[in-house]
Image (cartoon, rainbow, N blue to C red; front, side, top):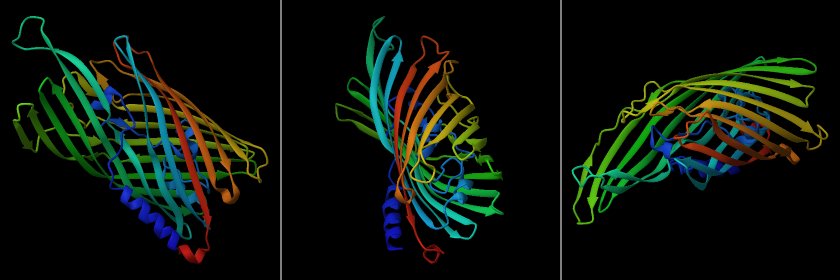
Length: 401
């Protein structure tokens, strides 16, 4: 039991750290930044679909009910990293960046018969950009302009616990409660003057989930559903203005429009055939209607996401098989700029390598692009790499009850 307490001591301090940048996109300036939708873990190569996935050897971040499938005699530790090479195009010019960060960290175990729990830390959103614009000088000589540098850093992360109950080995219900917090800093620098807005945001978030398993001799069907409640973000904003002449003024409790973590729901299904093939599909809907915009040309639109995934087991099923993964998906951005909407699509793939004791090393690749984009819109393309390690430690029941 001592080793598990050490693991907890490692995880808990991280839960109070700010989210680190995983984007350099100018659109992360708006709303609460670029959203992390929980992709990662062993199913990163399956397009992020996971509402109906269950396994005794990994923790599913897409549905809290899925932890009821964990092996009752194992203590599972799961950790993942994400890196990405991103290319942005705007008005004919391109820029690129390399970003990366811890993507997921959790432990899961059985508490009592049919009752399971996990502790987790994961990113919620990321803000990271640096843009230089030439603005017309009001009251100056006709046609004169000044260069302004806009920068943003920070993001939100969450730490929480999940619990699930398994009824008659068929129906599983679960819930996750998380504390969301982080700081986003945005600055504008023009000549000798600078203005900085630092916004500390926090909230509590609740996710609900359910899965129903239909078993057969040669195939299994799992149906899943998830729901998240909309929650307001409590903000403490500080506005600081400064100049090279030495004058500095600080105004606390700066005003920013209301922001919310969106309400959402999702449904999914997975089908397993002859223990070798697995097919899964998700649909998710995110409601951003409560978030208010500070700028007249920015609107926030509800999102629709469709995700598809497939898995094939290679080699001997009982002696360290390899899982080959494929996935794809489409979605729309929740940020609408000057009535121009970005439509996103992606494809993904990967492999899971099983080792002794059911520990797993997972690799995933994801290519993301946009279609139907206006030539004056920003185009965002990226190639993301996921690395995940899952440790399965066998323990006796007396240690975890």
